[in-house]
Length: 191
Image (cartoon, rainbow, N blue to C red):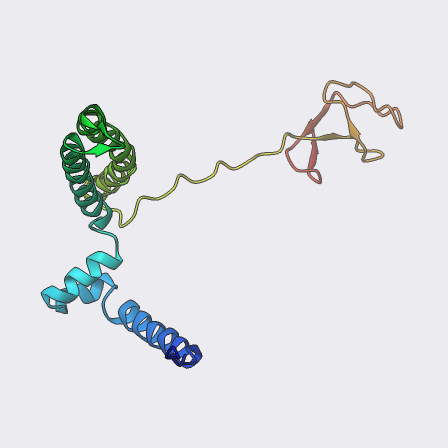
């Protein structure tokens, strides 16, 4: 009779893991991440702060490692395929194609991935240069332009909106040309 393995209820472990993660996150945000606390940190916690503040990108190193290992794998796989046979057929040309084309395909794939990493690094470098040259703590987004509504010309007699070039009100017939209209709807001055 096959041996049965007992399963455990993972619910309490998940709850404990979530609580531990929350407590550690709060501690890191309060004690490690603020820039004013950086001077009092030892080297380990400075590295932790750099990781959580994204000062150094780990993705670039990981991609380089994966690129190297996958390229070497394809080359060795192609080399061993040179000397293998499938159904009595030599795999020499398949191995040669794998050794030549495999690294090229991998290189193109990883170059496309690394472009995004380089883009982010360049943006970070630009922000650092802006900080040094302007003394700002963070690059500020340009402020939105204030939209000024065009002045509405209103008739002083009946207070309806009239054509800006009109000489008389189309509703009550009052003469409009000698009036000076301000940008406010309520403020109307006469010469």
